[in-house]
Image (tube, rainbow over all chains, first blue to last red):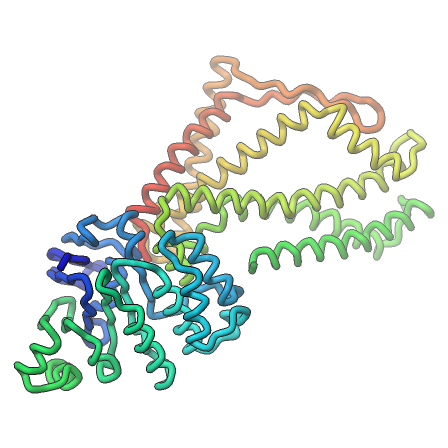
Length: 233
Length: 262
């Protein structure tokens, strides 16, 4: 087993607000980590720092042993929680964009996944529903042969059928060589695919561990554990 | 594609305005240009004004490659996650901006040359028709005065690069350290004006002290073979600006890679 992501005392401050208060996390290859917490707990900030969209205020992280920067962007695939594609783009335009900028992008896989997601190549982003845009972004993110996939709320605002399709795609795309971090509130829909879980609140990790071990130890599903931990905080 | 559509729309507007103006000018030259109908004169003034001013505005907008959009819109997620160095992103946007500017400026220049071809013969003592005047304009620009035109275009390209780099540095630096967009914009403009003023003053003093000037040969006149005075460009100012622009490009690239965040 090799370590894909390792963070050490990762901090992020926005003026007086401490968004992350020293996160220590290790994620090995072949593992899917569920990152869970209430709104404003620091999940998205954590993912953005790893993706290179924000800079940490303290601490360090490495991806495949490489420190944050140009090299880590080559191996990290980020699915943000909002649409970032230009409205004038069609699905094919978006695929062409990714193919131009990411060496590890698999164009054929992207086209196959587009059909699986029931998206047309010529559909424009501005004419797509939220669910369709989410599926397109997922297609783009998962068509890369990245070491680390970061999915920020991939199921948010999406209908149950599309959610099922997205979860299937995540399972299909999973490989032993890579690791996936999924941040989500819809724990019930995805907990069956988590190998590891991490609960975060107010910028701190309050519980981490193997998902199955936690289920056995606590006698509860991860969803129930989530409710138990955050209901009273 | 969005920007391509904007350019095509702008060119379509130029085209329509100028075609109306040409009709007015031709009608005016047939009757009496000095007594052109005020309605037609309105179209002529508007067409020439819009076609002249738009490229100047585009010069400033396009020289930055629209980097401020990159730093403030959601689509910036895309550009900030791609594995590209800061200089690649800024340099690429600059080239795209140059292409966008030329896509507007060249047609605008062509449209203005048609106005000149229609109007100049009526204002000169030469008895040439508009077609001959049109041919003579391009002969003067591309053959007779090729060297000074090329020198001026080179200076224009330097100015485009310098303005773009200065503005980009101001935008990237303020985005790196100031999170509020309104304040960042105000700081960008203040930094830009301050640096331009200082560079102009120091460059001008240096050129004066050492008499470093680049003389651009006089132009032959378009109609009457008159001569325009030699243009003396202070070399020290140009070199000073280029050196500062190079340093600011390097600084902006570093900030883009290491400091800019959403």
